[in-house]
Amino acid sequence: MTKILHVVGARPNFPKLAPVHRAAAAAGLAQVVVHTGQHYDDAMSASFFRDLEVPTPDINLGVGSQSHAVQTARIMERIEPVLLAERPDWVLVYGDVNSTAAAALVAVKLGLLVAHVEAGLRSHDRRMPEEINRLVTDRIADLLLTPSRDADEALRREGVRDEQIAFVGNVMIDSLFHALQHVPADAGARDAVVVTLHRPSNVDEPRRLASIVEALREIAEARPVVFPVHPRTRQRLEDAGLPLGAVRLLEPIPYREMLAHVSRAHAVVTDSGGLQEETTALGVPCFTVRENTERPVTITEGTNRLAPDPAELPRLVASAARPAAPRRPEGWDGHAGARVVEALLAFVDRRPADDAVVVEV
Ligand code: UD1
Image (cartoon, rainbow, N blue to C red; front, side, top):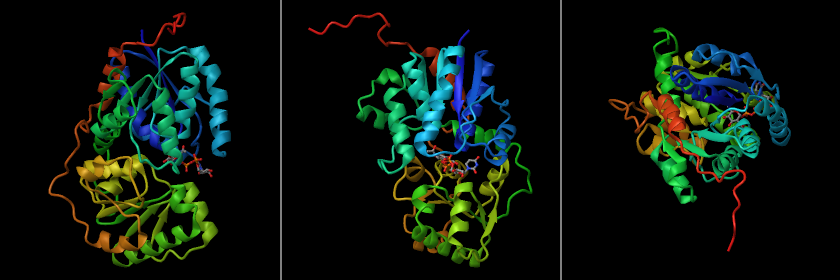
C-alpha cells in the first residue's frame, strides 16, 4: 500500500493539507502527518485542525519560534529520524514556509520521493523568505503540483521537465468550499473591511507600519475595520504604540470564523497569500499591501489588486465593488485534493537507480 507522509508547520499549511488528506484517505492510502511545531498557539494551529476536520498530527516536532536558521536547522534535525523510521513512498510538503524547505531538503537526501503542493509560485522578490523557500523546494522536489497555469510556465522557464510538473489546481479552494458549508449564517460583520498583516516588509519597519495604521484609521472612520492580529504584528504594534482609532483588533481567529468575516466583507486589506486566493474565489475585493504577488492569477482573473502605497488604501477601499459573480481560475473547483492523489499514483520515477553508473564520455 502506498504510504504518504505529510509535513506541515505553519497556519497557511493546514488548509492545504486537509483536502489532500481527505482524498488520500478515500483512496485507501496509508498516511502519517508530521507537524513541525513552527506554529503552536491553539489559535494558529490546533483550532485549524478542528475546523478543517483533519486528525491531530501523528508526530509533533515542537520546534517553536526561532530565527530562520535555528528554526530550519531544528526541523531538519528532528525530522530526519522520523523519515528514517517511517520510510514513506512519498513525502508531501506544502506552500512556502520554513517547514516546507527544511523537510524537502532532508527527505530528498534520504532518497525519498518528495512532492510539493503549491509549486511554481514566484514573486521574483528574493527579499521575501517565502520566495527563497519556494525556489529551494521546487529545485529539489521530484513532483511539482501546481495551483495555476502561470506556475507551470514559471517552472518550465526554470528548466523543470514536463514529467515533473502536474497541474492540479488550488487545494485552498477545496478547503474553502468545504468550510463554507459550516459557516454560521450570522457570523461576521457585514460590509466591514477585514485586515490581516504579518509580512516582515510591512510590520517590521516602523515607518511603514505607521503609514499602514494611519490608512486603516482613516478607513475606520467610514466603516467597521476588523483586524485579527498575527502574533508578530501584535508585538510590533505594541512596540510602536500607534493610535488605532476605531480599528478593532482581534486575536487570531479560527478558520471558519475568518471565512465568515471574509465572505461578508466589503473588502479585504492584506499581505497574506491565502487571502488573495480566497477573496478571488468568493468575489470579494482584495487590496494586497505589497509591491508584487506570487499569485498573479488573482489579479488577472480575480478580485485582487496590488496596493503598495498605504496612502492609497482609503480611496481604493471606498470605491471597491464586488463583481456580479466570482470568476474562478481553472482548477479552483473544489477537486484539487483528488487530483493531487491521482498525480502521486500516476508518477513514474525516472531518477537514476541508486547503483546506476553514469559514464561521462
Ligand atoms: C510564517 C511563514 C509565513 C506565513 C505565516 C502565516 C515562514 C518563513 N513564514 O510566518 O510564510 O505566511 O507563517 O502565519 O515560514 N508566534 C506565536 N505563536 C505561534 C506562532 C508564532 O506567538 O503559534 C509568534 C512568535 O513570536 C514568532 C512570530 O510569531 O516569533 C513569527 O512566527 P514564525 O513562524 O517565525 O513566522 P510567521 O511570521 O508566522
